[in-house]
Length: 358
Image (tube, rainbow, N blue to C red):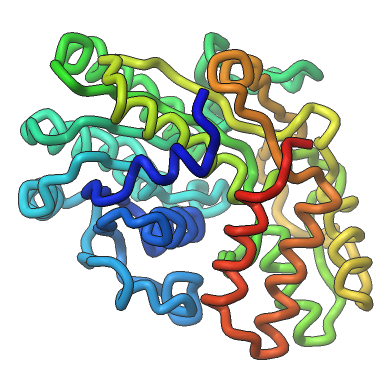
């Protein structure tokens, strides 16, 4: 399989549409592809103040349209206007807690929004490749110690997980019904675990919560210290999405199935361990557990088996756990010290491209 830089360069002068470009993962992907000469277009909700998107000044680097994936008419009109070669569908309601508070919005966005982008692709013949992003939480989590493979059962107890499983079922239906025999086209769904990295300011996420506390000289408060997650730097799964997208651009493939992109199984750490690692890298801070928070069900053990991506693409994580924490906290330290965010982010992209597999 071609290396990552070759995959990135295959997007040069390609028209790439990224839904959710104002989000954490979407902003990193937008910058990365822009850096390699892609003509990047974004469709997403208006960026929040101090988001990675805003701090990068991405609106001056790419073409962006404020929009909601739940609005089929607007989304379809924009896809028709852009005439993209490649679509990365990343727009989502991404938090378990939010899904409990507003399950309808979660299903409307994650399932209904998925239907809408698939409808737009179906009616836009110029699209050559679709990378449809869901989550590791699409799997029916039986809290087993092995990693889940792409053929494992889908499902979910909380509304967020169920919405991601639903999105996968919708994608599979469209892929089989409409895309399997479409000429010069390939579609795939991708599943990744918890991503961390500089530029994430979301509520109820471990790294942003830690950083906000540290900047304010307050103790870090966590609600579920023993929960384990397949922690990985945001650039890890994005490198997998890019590799897949480049392959589909070159080879088509029709319905190209589903792919996991996660860290090695020995990179699974508890929320408490991550918080302590953050304190160590920051150089100060303290930790306390919130015993009073409402105990909504949230899976405590979940990891992915990525043998399929390794065997087919030779895709492997490049940054181990310690390096992931170090790069992440360095980004926030630079931000706190008023170092230019665009330069910090570009530097980390280059460092990732030049690094070897762990």
